[in-house]
Length: 504
Image (cartoon, helix red, strand yellow):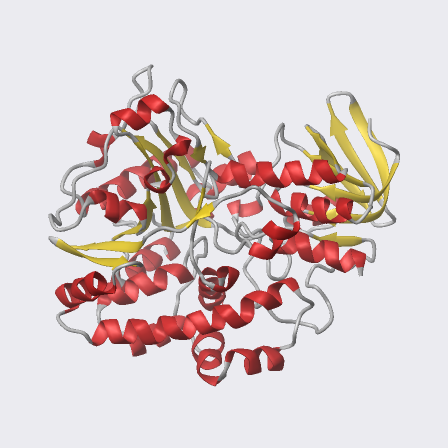
């Protein structure tokens, strides 16, 4: 049993809660972390998902962009985030658009081959030059008290403010680019885990896009060496080393704003007191723990984890599959294809040709594979499907999961030279190494209302000046998870900010 009273009790042992615990314990606070599962990390975990197969799959979250290098340095994390040489590859007929981070000439030739000239590449460079400047300016503010709207506008400049913060990103992309493929590549960052029309004036897609291009001042999406579990494991080690107490198998069942948390473990129910309570759970879950209610959000993604016996062949003979799959491999994500899939899902149907993106962690970090798999040429493959809202899986979770999987694999096969099913590794029992996670699965397995990977819709990175964006309606309770302002993704930012709000 823990002490009966702590300076801080953190509800939820996901990566953000571990960041908060590490900072607070290093500052001398008595910290208790309560995690309902038998392991910490939340969605930032690795697992041997297939029995008898020596591959550690990043089962839910899979890439890192938003984690600030300052947090890594502050906490002394032994985590390596490896940059991918190739940003993306998008099949187009028998060719494809390859964006090579280390060979500008090859990228230019690919743009010319796909788009028929140099205009789209020039527009691409102008647009991403603008987002790079925004990233450099905005990223440092994410670890500071909030600035207001006017200050953020002044910081990013008039052009970026107009095109990223005021106008629908779909309109901006249509205006800046003429090629459907290029438009789609840009728009996918506005739709990750977000069911939205990029032309909607509510600008939800804009907020999603912004968080996908500002990570750590570069916007790079990096591979965590050892898998996503290495990130959470490093954070847990840092928190424990600083003196934080972490209990797994301890599910919070009630929170009292006066400063008490009741949790349940195998021995029964227990209540601990706290000067402050940090909620590393979705806002809808905190509302339930407080005995109130908040509408559940709606997640929108299909996650498919695979282990392959070999990489699939491409229709494009000029591109090595190892290059195409080490970056983000876009599957039927042209602008018009994205719009069609959104319309079908909004009408309550699983898209006929689901858009998705794929990458192979093991091409950048083979350490997640056992020696035998590496020697045999096996690889992991992660697929993230767009426009798959939770509503599509409510009535018949198992049947709709299977329908969505079949449609998604068929969509992928449309752009490959052979069926992806022919490349799947078989486990010792003969089953294919493939697992599927819908929003309803995330709701059931991970406790995420609506299966929303960001806990709720993303917010703008500005607000009431001087506050940290972690405040709730209760003085003793702060958010420290993805549902905080400036939350979402594997970042640690809400955990850092909750700690700083408490310490200040």
